[in-house]
Image (cartoon, rainbow, N blue to C red; front, top):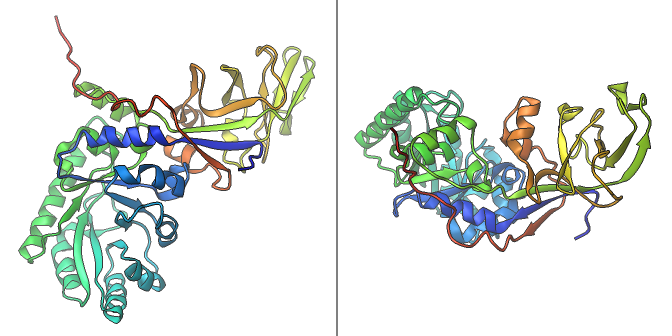
Length: 398
């Protein structure tokens, strides 16, 4: 594969180890769905699916096009489409045996018509709204909706699901537990209408870690599969509960030094003259900018790694370039590797650090890396050695 000035390396063994780590938190009968939507959170859709296919039970995607892309790499595992449904895709959903989250009756009718035409079954998962107020059938109406859907030819209510609003962003579980109660009420309503889906799912990464009561018969593992914590609060809560969970980020974003140059004290760097050198400096021009997904808000705020040492971003991040201060990096050379995100030697620039610097979340930092950048799968030889540390920490108190 020919690499340009900036590329992504994804460690397949770390992906697998992260997935296996979460598997240890589940009952043996609980299925695990790995979420690979949005280009697998920036890691590469096909690459990620092929890396973890043998270690997951289901895959979750956002769209039919994503489902189509992983048809081979998924290795025959069920694929659940969790995003928008376009009626013109009904035939393909049925033909490919895909599952789809539903919350509108016209969606179910389109799938029913496609299934009846082909003499096949459309397996759907009813999305139940419990408080997030995005997709979903209101929980009080779920039983009637599911009964009406099940009465249509070719429709099987295979699953029921919900999504928590703030389970990962707070140390107070009150609202999440209220949503869980509403979900259970809705499931009772489905049962009252003679519908008992075999696949019940509510928990994403934070729920898997912190709330076993949310596991039901399947969980949806998203950001944790990639070795990233959903939030600082989730990590703190896990520690308070005595869980010792080792997650290893699987993605490293690398670039090469495009040019080294010297400037004198008083000279400016970049558009808008936003940086003025306070000393004689050595600069490294890096061929990655906001087109590639390196956020413009990292102007005069980010840092990268070169030779295992931090190098500040100075001046404005441009469309395809950024500039680093490498004055204190001895013997920096043109064309050598720079790490924009990830680990180099013992040093690391984690996604949550970049997210904090620009006022966002690690999900956005990862998902907005340009999908056109080359993704290269590598294997850390140490990552398959055992399961990532997980267990109960014992603490003593005087």
